Image (cartoon, rainbow, N blue to C red; front, side):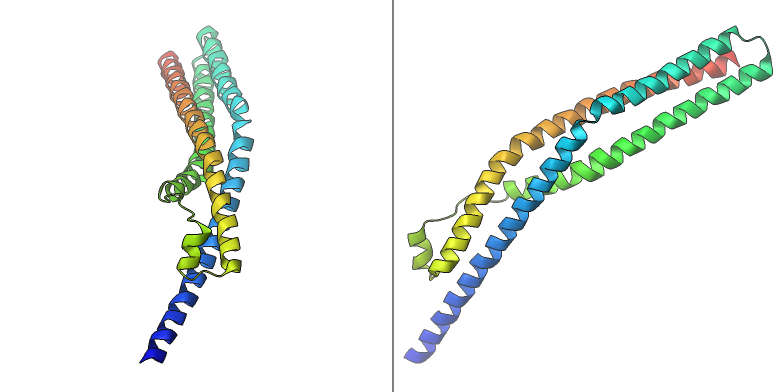
Length: 194
């Protein structure tokens, strides 16, 4: 009987060490994923002014076309200009889709998943003494401690950047909504002039 208990305990110790090493690997992967996400998000944030400029350029082109349509007496030419205004509106919709692909699918969704991982973790790495008491080996403790502390540091780095990117996206959504409203007004004006 004693021998069976010892074998069971040895199996539990092995399982515990394997669990800690597996979690350590998951933590290192989460840190790598967070670093990639941060780099990607910050790189795309630099292009926000360019995206806004694209919207402004489209709107300016539409205003120019509507102005020309007002001055045009020929009905066929006015119709052609009206179609060009609608095509510019479609170009604006395509920019909306590109922004959504980058910000919502490329940055937003992966960021939310990482944020859930960080939020779901209590941040308790435990002490060497507590880990040894559970049967962790020195090698396991070293791997666990390094990965756990790395994850704690990464969470502290990730959270403010995640909030900042969320604010960038919210601001961009407002800008997009305003731009879309302006485009629709110009399309309506072009149709009325037709």
